[in-house]
Image (cartoon, rainbow, N blue to C red; front, side, top):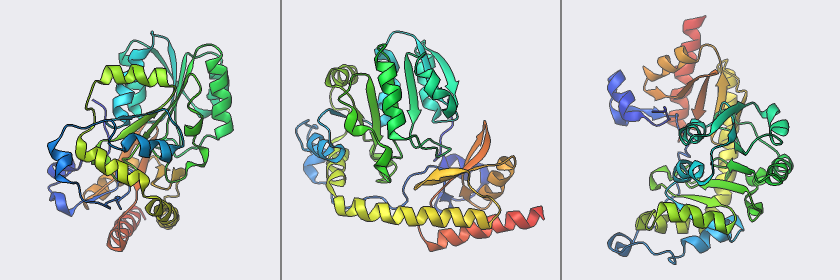
Length: 330
């Protein structure tokens, strides 16, 4: 089983700190969730229906017609490898580890790639899987590069899969609007930018015949009615989205400045997290955890991912804990 951020109950048990006393910076989820509407009783009482408005809201939000709502992008990640005969799949590394795991489990040969390897790999692979911006490093891949690599893959019947889980805060490099092209698959989610990870709502954007194949595997009622209702209204709330993008941009700059002051300059990131590669990652993670602050620890390469605190008291708490760690080292 792979490790993921957000294992807060396990941390509470391990460190003997009550659940409600933790500051969870481990997930990259927006700490200010969209919460604009009450769920009606009918959403709980009736089976979900495909024509309830969610699909139309997603089509408007992504500016495409071919969209399939799924139970979080993880649902698509689990099933995508089953839709293709075993072949050679390149996966950006380090990156969201579920991609490599699921392709490998389905019998494909998985080749870890650095970003610099991708241009040449596009001429040799059957499938290229990227996360943009990348998780955890925050590397961004320009839209023009992605479309060029897709064209070279598609010319040989290959696929380009781009996981855009963190793209909503700054969608300038998104290729969602191009997904009518054969062999181009984009994954999106409400979990990160909208702060609705618990709703388990994601989207696959691709050619219609590809979406039909995934839908056939998933079967009916993949998303609960209340989650569909919330997702529909969150996608339609453009004023909230515009205000949140500005807010997250400012919060990102604040986190970068805080980490720099504490001697941990980030090497990359996006509006929802910052990536700090350091040989001291495990020691910093442990020190913060003993103070009830959970970060996401990586060991290949060694580094920490820091999500955003929600309010001033949490910002101050993080700065105090990092300052105390630096004092112990000096």
